[in-house]
Amino acid sequence: MLCLRSKTEDAWLARAIADTPALLIDHAHCERKAAMQAMALLAEYPCHPELVGPVVAIAHEELEHFTLICEILAKRGIAIEVQGPTGYQAGLFKKVRKAEPDRLIDRLLIASLIEARSCERFKILSERHPDPELRKVFGDLLACEARHHADFVRLAEQQADRAEVQARLTHLAGVEVRAIERAKPLPRVHS
Amino acid sequence: MLCLRSKTEDAWLARAIADTPALLIDHAHCERKAAMQAMALLAEYPCHPELVGPVVAIAHEELEHFTLICEILAKRGIAIEVQGPTGYQAGLFKKVRKAEPDRLIDRLLIASLIEARSCERFKILSERHPDPELRKVFGDLLACEARHHADFVRLAEQQADRAEVQARLTHLAGVEVRAIERAKPLPRVHS
Image 1 (cartoon, chains in turn yellow, orange):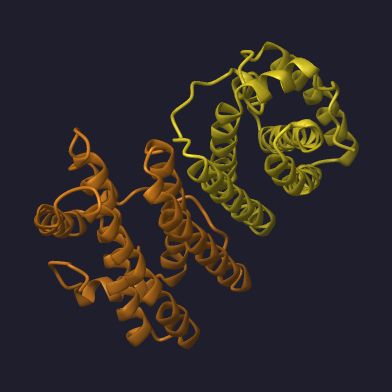
Image 2 (cartoon, chains in turn purple, cyan):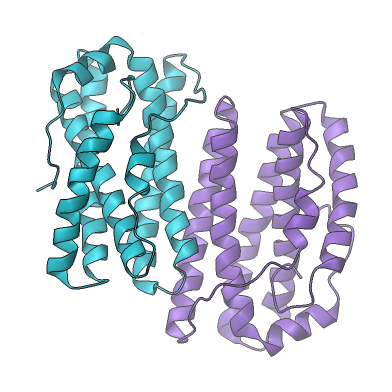
């Protein structure tokens, strides 16, 4: 359902467990960045009224998750610090085609794949992280990530022939596998 | 209460009434930009947990207003197009000091002044625009803008001595007067 073309390896979970504060800080940044990228889409494509409702709804939810993770960090006395990039997002966005509507389709499909990877990894954390509070938090969030994934795919399918969009999604899912394999091996959601 | 150091002239209202579609498109962009600037503050100042709650709350409200204005535009068959800058925001942001916490204080105070000017002008529109639906919309929004203005001032006051912050606000309110006077005379919220 999520269109991903690789399964996350146990080494990722080991890194996430070994430095859970860094994972949570990254998670807060991911939620904030997802909200900002959603709003950036609306800035770049103001003439697409079909984007407004679904994309604003996603931005609201990302902001809610950002607040939730910030509260967990504050409760645990963990300061949110700046973190350097892992190369994952750069590896994806460099494949965005230049001409329209290809560019918009790629932006939407890449957003859908980032949500899909979050969802897959939140499921792993919800089942296997030793901290029960975090198992619950990630378990609560993963359905939302799956819904965002589906929303972005649906919006992409409104921009062109559905079969073409599905073929492009399959291609970009291959790009996503390479991007996540090449990302720096840090305790991050996408690394 | 709003700290503004000039009153909007009737010529602005005449422009707004003469091209209300352009004003509404700008208003949609303003709400989106306000949400993005709020999130950008959280990106740049991740180590300030006191910002998270109030700033995320503001971002949520800006997104709600953006959606509201997009709905009004759609209902009226007005497409949201890209609009060039008027120079107002650039005139304000070039005065941001470089060192911290001055930079954060200035960012917060400039955000508070932009909200204040919106509030002052929404009040004029709520009383004097010939369209009854828009009089109601702007009347409903202006209390929110006033609250955001106060929120940003309060956050700035948490960063340094209150009297110093108030003196800086008075100074920047003078900068705001020059920025709005020098902005291109277009049918915009801040021009």
